[in-house]
Length: 461
Image 1 (tube, one colour):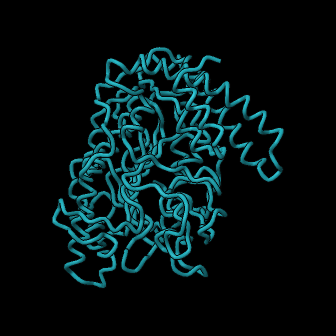
Image 2 (cartoon, rainbow, N blue to C red):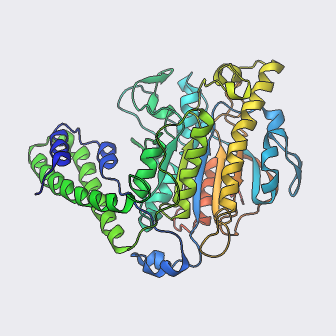
Image 3 (cartoon, rainbow, N blue to C red):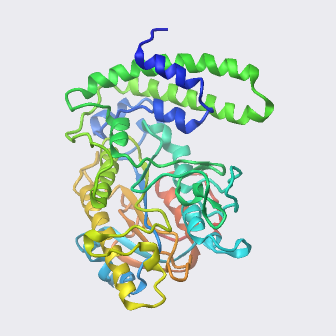
């Protein structure tokens, strides 16, 4: 096998690996994209994608922390005759393309017999609907999140099954909230009950994963070089895995199986990439790293989702604006006190007003993101927003009460025309899992009749 300085260092490092799927994929994730152009749809390698009528459906989940100021959040009026409250004023130009949904609950985020730890449970339950096992050790247990359930069904149709992003730190071990592992509090996407999908916070790494490294002129050449490196590394890993299989204990069997599965997935994706021909090279400068201030970080991470959807690199994405329990201050809007501290407002009007400012600040960036999707034409002539479902939500309703009923929820886009937008939709105390199951239906994912704590009723989104 040909070697160079890169692969020599890689080989030395690989012998120290703990067979972590995350570590493996960070090194080998494909970094290419195919635009969603009608003329290219028949060339997609998989028969299912070739049979797709019109443009693909997409879904994204944007998560916010610590609840919201209820008075400034919920609209006035009902149905189509509703008025946006102060927090949602930035969405006014897009009012006909959203629906505000009330009455969605996550009962498994409540304390029950587990006591304190509402922030960890809020994040853990948000996209899974499941109750997290209370542990700060390695024996975490939760459930598969809705985004990953969708990715398991349609992720093979794109170069990346899903995209997980954060504007926050990434922590996956240790005690973060009253005996709950940090893995619960800093992740919302879960591939399985024991496997979180850690998000990426560095937009440069996200962009290079999608489109390659270097300047716009260098990307294609660097991509070809990276492909050759990937093949060489895969050759080594495959041989090394066989050797490990002969030495591994029964206890290590599960981890080794996961490792080998990762190898097969990357091999399949490299093969898919090579069948799709010429790659796009977006007119977007490679981000330099994690930007400062925070609003620049939010903006560029939203841009990564826009680019990923525009190029059909993936159809499923999550973005954590901040983890639940975050005590970030927002001096750029005149809020110098920590968000989490403010969320325990005790009815104090000054604190409530500052929470409302934070809520609206987050909403302004969400609205700018939706506007970009609304102005991006899709393969069928509609906008990407029209063909998407973008959920904006959080695992706490009121941060002071740590309540997990009547959670904030905005669902933007019409899922290709199937959703009822331009309305305030009021449900009667329904598991959020019910709505997630409806979303799978609108993604044309058939055969899934139950998700988490779904009680069988339809949210009729």
